[in-house]
Length: 331
Image (cartoon, rainbow, N blue to C red; front, side, top):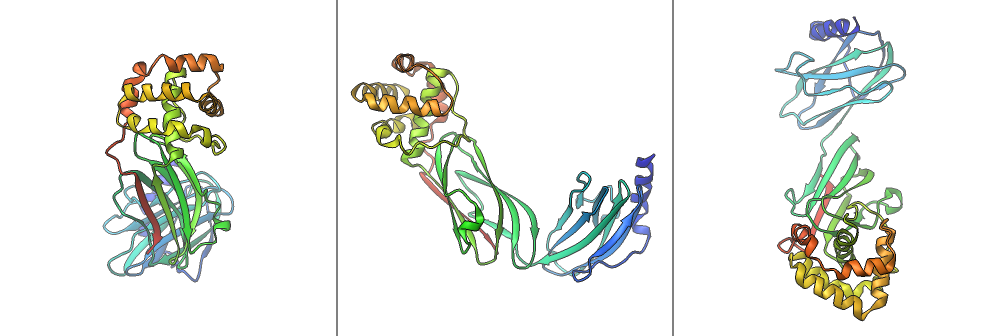
């Protein structure tokens, strides 16, 4: 029965006149279950619009209609979260002043505050086409002075890169962003909420570094000795191991080329010459959760890379750039 009431409300939303919603005067209202309330809204030329519905109790949904859309069932501009969550609809900048209808639909009896904001600014990623990194930005809210969003960085490639994150024009102590981390094949890292002002930037750099090469080698060794790869999103400290892992870094090049025979020969020769490097590699994998006695670990490495040659070939990335720099800004 509630579904029938809501459906009738959706159909009749455009047929009733309502209050006008403006940026200076939020609307405090109350709606019954199955009821639909309509409000008028004028969208200014050249500015993006954010319509926000904050439930003080209960559950209500938010819909915005722009011509030629005249039915709530057809509009792409809607927000239907669960009870007590803020509903938010962000509309693109309009080429001219445009009239819109804002419809609040009561799922249950709800008291709410309805508000609107405008901004001429928008979030931008440069360059727009990338080879290594994939930037995911989920806009949460904005005002004329800042844009707030949830930021995720993803690795588009089949190999390992070290990612550095630098803020420009922002107090880094307030951002809580990681300075650097290593990201594996197709891995993702959620960096949290970020507020960007028009005069601020975040610079994300993907680099092929010694630390990234160490993860590549350890990943291939893990597949050899344990039959599983390292999680691409793993977050472990290895700085203390890097001095003893340094002799292994030359192995990364043939691995990236898919030359498993040369990589295997170089790996075994290096570990025979340097027992402390074998120990460091063993400790590295223990930190990732791979638990094997050191003698078993060494004997499995000595068996060669032939069994995982196809996997290593799939991880090769010789034609990828060694570095990519992405700038996140507000225009």
